[in-house]
Length: 90
Image (cartoon, rainbow, N blue to C red):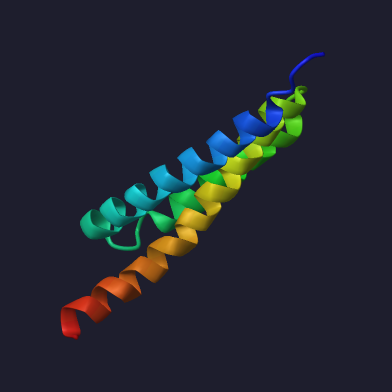
């Protein structure tokens, strides 16, 4: 019987990138406003392209999860900007 670790690796990757992205978005937005959004979108697109080009399924999955998280972090920077403005005024 052999064990398949892909599910565990992908789950840990998802958890880690979401957690890292949450902290990254808050810090980047506090320091730079919404300016980092476009670089995050572009980085996510580049990593997504890499996920298509690599040969290994597991590496492709890890890169794909990381790419989508980066793209979502770009969206979340704008949402964080709205939340922080709302906190300051209300």
